[in-house]
Length: 83
Image (cartoon, rainbow, N blue to C red):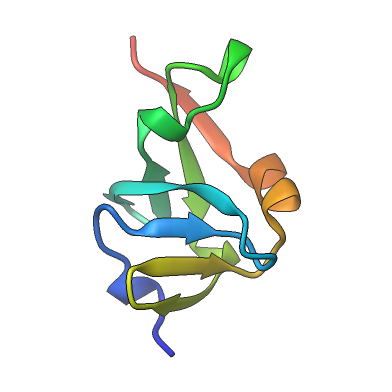
């Protein structure tokens, strides 16, 4: 069992339910920046999304498991547009 310090680029981020949430682009402070490919559609498209360190439950192998199910975790995501 590992923690936030072990999160690396290109790891898969999954919810507690095992559902894909995104892919790690990099760490920015106490947040995981997800790749734009996982930004979603519509108004979410083209934005980087961030997952707070507080949602990381475990890091194992090449996966970051969150403490919330995927559908709940995405409601906690923060957005930042690249202008």
